[in-house]
Image (cartoon, rainbow, N blue to C red; front, side, top):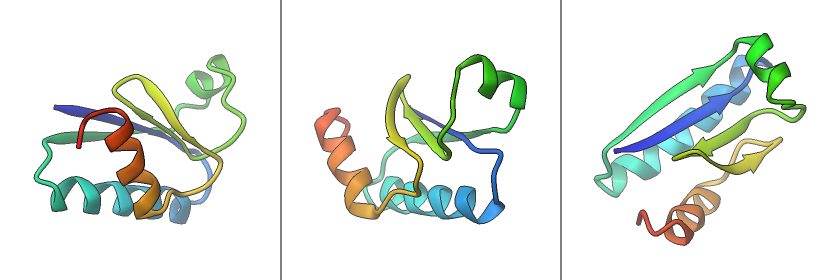
Amino acid sequence: MIEVKIYCTKKHELYQSTYDTVTKIMTENNLEYRIERITDTDVIRRRNITNQPLIVINNQIIMLAHPPSEHDIKVTLIRMKLL
């Protein structure tokens, strides 16, 4: 199972756009995944996350500061050998 964490306390639209893109790519490729949204400001502060949304896939930071495109997610999954 692919574990995805999206760190985002900003506008809901930023999170939703990121969530929708990740979900679309995972579903289209029949991947088993779980998405967790991290909004706890203490956690975000302790991890020194300044740019949001921050996307972590299987404990690896893959995207900072902007919602990813479908292409971004596909390339990342290929690079990680998950696709």
